Image 1 (tube, rainbow, N blue to C red):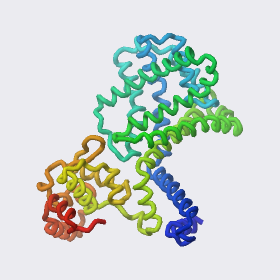
Image 2: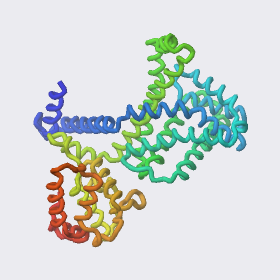
Image 3: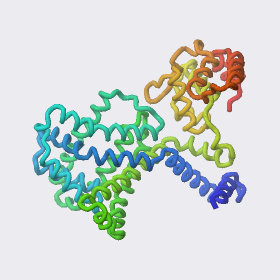
Image 4: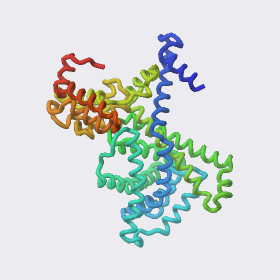
Length: 432
């Protein structure tokens, strides 16, 4: 069945199932391309595994984060009634109806815990545990966007601290404003506020957490989709637990701890939805290059075997060098994927090897520049660095023959990047 569906998809992509002039058929094939890209990226990034890890850290860090947030914002003027109202909105935004008792359990922890009685070591431990959730979420976002976490530990911890203090303050300010200026619409606002809060949080996270420039269009598409799915999943999860009697069955197995597995299951669903929105934002951000690569992959039997190699990396480095020599701004990873027509995943992987090798540096707005003058970098040096970092490690008896081939290739590539870039501009090298 799967092979038959694959053949139909390949035939449709190649235009063998109907007239290429049929607009409806073309749009249908394009929609299938988009769906395939989204599913493929989701599977490759193993969202289910990442969601399980983040669910664990959420369960561990929820009390420390709320304890830190409300303890640090207390001296800034939040009254007890405002703090309680903020808690209610947070619980309504995050918790499904079937796990709403978690809010009461968290409240009991917050009422009995006091930072003033924990000492320096205790407060430090609480801050460390709470920050782990932020760091793991940041890492997941950057992995999905194929970029590295480039912020220093100090800056990352500062962002975490700002988030747990400014979040409750902004939420409290919004509630006060809605109470004062929108008296008649308070019930309506109480319904929309969780959705609005979730949307703002998810869009802001997509914009700020990846170490690359995320366009507003991509962030809004991913954040709003996750927020809508999130609200729908809260209703669906409540129905699931009620219809299947999940909580009653858990009570039989776990007794008084029955709420914990249900809560962990809900956190897992929550993070699946959130990470799906991040994946959608990545696809929207790179939709043109991803779709172009998928159009070719749909009719290419060898697409699954294709991976970036040293010559592919050398070609990308030549593009960066050419832009530098011509006085243009450095290309971004998205620019290189669009101009070469290559799979963005291959472009990102090659740029990572080139950056590790010290051939390029990332400047402002994710644009790449040569790390050294192009005339001082030889093509053979680039290929050797690639072999050291990304080629299979051959150390057996037959590796002598492989090294001979590599040495011969180094002799043939005895030219510098400036010449390669000049030859390409002059039309002496083919554009692929």
